[in-house]
Image 1 (cartoon, helix red, strand yellow):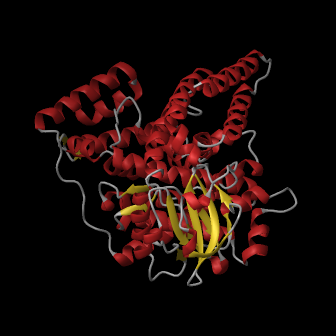
Image 2 (cartoon, rainbow, N blue to C red):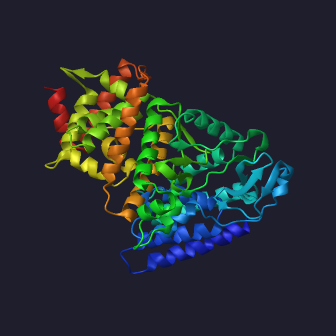
Image 3 (cartoon, helix red, strand yellow):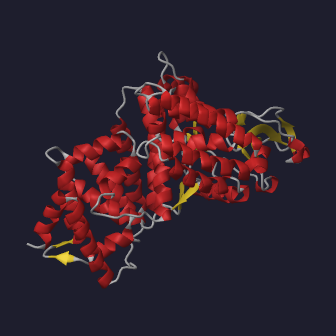
Amino acid sequence: MMRNARRYAKLVLKLVRIKLLRTTKKDQEYRRTIFESFREWGGVYIKFLQVLGSSSKFLEGWGGPREMRIFTQAPREPINLSEYVNLRNFADVSDESVAAGSFAQVYRGHLLTGEDVAIKILRPSIQKNLKADLRALKRMCWLFSKFLPKSLVDYNDAYNTYSKILIQETDYRKEVENQKYFIELYRDYPWVVIPKVYEQMSSNCVIVQDFIEGMTLADAMSMATRDRSVVEIVKEATGSDVWEQVILAGGEALYTAMCADYVYGDPHPGNVVLLSENRIGLIDFGIIARKPTSHEAYYDWVKAYYDILRGKDKLKELLETTVTCFCPDLALAMRKCSFENENLLEILTSAIAQKLGDGASGDARCAQAFQDGHLMEVFIQLVDTRALSVKIDEVNFELLKAMQAFLGAVTILDNRGGNHDFSEIMERSMEYALINAQKTGVPHDSVRTSRYGMTESYELLVNTVSSLADNDEYLFNLVREKIFA
């Protein structure tokens, strides 16, 4: 209790000093101070930094390659291995941990049968201080929200995401089951390597699995300098093209969301291992995202984004597929309200597309925002208007967050690597996913039932039109022309 109180007071003092400075870059100093304090404290605070660091906006303006070390080089703590594993099952085990994450430390060893293995152990400090640290972190997030605007970094939202992640990441039995699912999924696919897990040697706080030799994407990013790019570092170490590996990682994430039951939910740079021949390895399966409410709607959404990145005039389709994919209940209700040859969803998306254009190319605006890697921001731009009151269901929100984690990492990599167009990377990842989904076959599982009856649907119509009349005259006039023509 006293330890967290002292930390809280010290951090508050630092933030207040920044607030009193005469500088236009206070937001950058706030974020840098939060980062440095949390990195020093370790444990749950490092994991929280990983959640924040997955958004390129948190590091924007001050973060560099060394900040990527939070994904693979957290502070170490002493662990008595004999308390966690039966050392007689191993021919040898390293005296020191070979990797230190926010929740676990990894030791390297060999089984008596010769297999090279990683021994992942949940940190004792996580088990001991978890509840107290979470309470302190929640108070700190409330404090941060008073210093920084919500539009930049929503700390309370990040905490809510983090608390759910924490529960998943400390359940090693569940993580083993997650890992077994992906082992089977990629059994006959040599380009993605999932380490074999030794279930009988694992426990509630230990996972024993094959050791994957190679640098992580975070390692490569943290080693980059002005004179030595990530591309050169990876080429020298593995012979691979890091951009091809990024496209593979992104393409597989999108493909599994279209065709599989689960999606890799923690694709941050420290969990993607770069291997030879443009292969990748995925490690750490504590977090997975469930399949979208509708694979088919998700496919249509990605296809609309892909078409926009290829220069096609598909903004209206993107709006429609966004609502249909992430808020299927709302989309069904809006489609019940028909006027002439259009329903309410079509009318609203046409109006919003026209407004977003506003004398310029609406497609170009969305493509540029997407190119910058801020998927959540793009989503809000498209559907969180006064025309629509959107609440994403939990399943689709998990998926959206997982995608944002990957996009944030690629954005940071692109900024460091230079001479590469982010939209090209995303276009190729989407193309990879769409082609493979077409080969496999996308499940026809569109949502066909809604809690909205006809009466509730027309109430939604009335409320939408009333809200537009009160808050957005431009959109109201566009919609009125269609509804009352």
